[in-house]
Length: 119
Image (cartoon, rainbow, N blue to C red):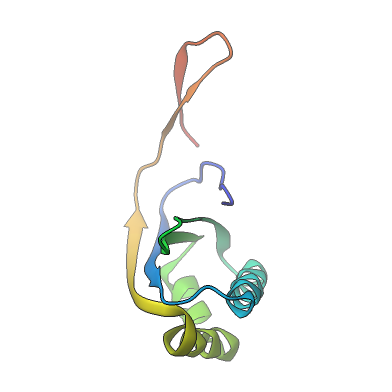
């Protein structure tokens, strides 16, 4: 799981939830390829991703603008990876796009007390 730092809103998130049909070496390679592609795109801010032993996963990617989200979606390499996912990796998936208008976090400090953080 990669973890992003707090970001300055507003920004956009793409929430990709999925259930794996089959996990393979090709899936890991495809996932790494798409992450590398995203890192080089204008407006990409980071991502978080988790998957449980049963194959249920959530990946959240962070983007500065809605146009950045749309432009990444149109890249041929990304579209080919989507098709590979439908053909070989996923039982199902859902995609949600949302605008983040507020963000904060809470962390436990070394002294055991908590503190709220803002970007």
